[in-house]
Length: 338
Image (cartoon, rainbow, N blue to C red; front, side):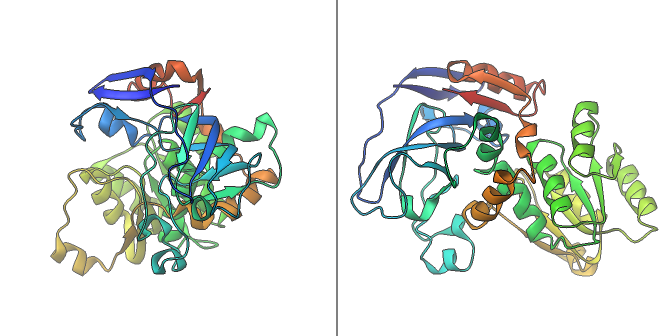
């Protein structure tokens, strides 16, 4: 079997790897129907997050169950399933509180850019669709494995409820799907921070009511102008840089919420500044497993179409081009088909 391996900055290869097998009685083997490149993969690809050895890549996946361990009871071979980028037993105290991405027994998924994938803790990680989906649904179902669930968590963490004024910082796939999530949750106004025409158009399709290209002090001034000097009820930070986090905090009115799901790189906060702002911060790795049943139903009924964020489709053996296209911002998100 061949799969994606990262050797160092800007060096992705599609090469021979061992095919996965059942190692534990709680495992499942999935034949991948679709996978993709994630924006968070680019931190490793660019060398911002260093690696010490050749590393298998990929954590977003959906596909057909090929085999299960003897203790797996909730899924069976032949079902189409979606799982999170973290495995979870879905029974530990953190899972029961709705934070499966902090499961006491979690493991990273990092080998999904390949034809086959082993998923541990299959009963607590994988969710089956009602039937085998048609091909047109597969991109949207794949998006639920990470980017749609992560955008949804941003809106959840920021307490987006009907009528709220929302600002989304970031116009990558997660940011765009955070806009879709805010719209689905009833936001009254959704302000998208974006400088890219193609992404602005998709933002409008997903529910954005205003587009703001300004950054820094100009961006803050524009948000205050649009909100009559008050600021936003909820800000969804979908980037992970110092600039993005500070913009999010400055956009938020006193008593408002920042939902931050961009993986932080070099972010530091001033405690005294936060103290006097009365801004509530909540975020982290999205507990995708918590949201999968609801999101699958929305996709299955065609009430949402998060698969629109895939604007480049490639055969899996061209995975390196997917990384290049996203790194160079020629693509929002690259879909990979085995």
